Length: 270
Image (cartoon, rainbow, N blue to C red; front, side, top):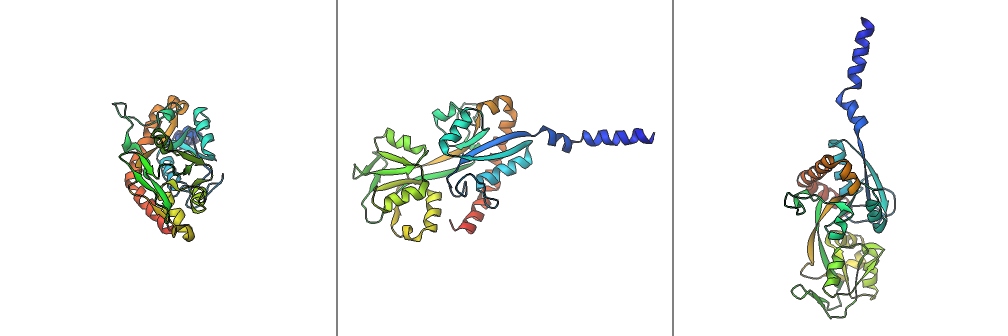
């Protein structure tokens, strides 16, 4: 009888929710850029910083605590991130909405078929910047910059660049991130640059010699929402879990994001 009770206890332990959860966790491979983007992703290269890895990573780790997923992080150049998603080698990347990206992954949608912005992870503002001795202007009504033949630069992968090119602006894209295009501006290679406002504020806070010479142009170009874009393969195999991931992200954006941003600004001075 004693042995029977022992086996019953073992059976209960093996079938407990905690044990089942450990065995049922689904690997969720998140691929993101090797270029730093404050406060979303910190550090450059393939390593993930132990402390302050970026608010996207913090939020995804909170999702991991809530749902039966095992988060795996990989850092790749942006074009490879998209390729990994298209090949189902990554479960997700971060992305603003573009029709071309909806062909390689799944955005959270409402019943109407529109992208559900309540499930976004963050929003950020795109803005032109110029040197304080240049007379660059931006007219949003005409979608033009003046002088008309001004050279412009943006980091590689910015979705807003396609929008600007469609309006006739000439924008070169560079692989060295915001710091790279800032140097082009400071050294007079271009007359204007395009950057996320949050990343630019952080970069200028770390480079006082640049901050004295760089000014933002009003008005801003536009604000864009950013989502966790899930691969078609992961969504096909785990549709309900995918929806739970988006729902958790939307909730955490409301409850945790302001505090996280404040912590990163206090730590990094961005």
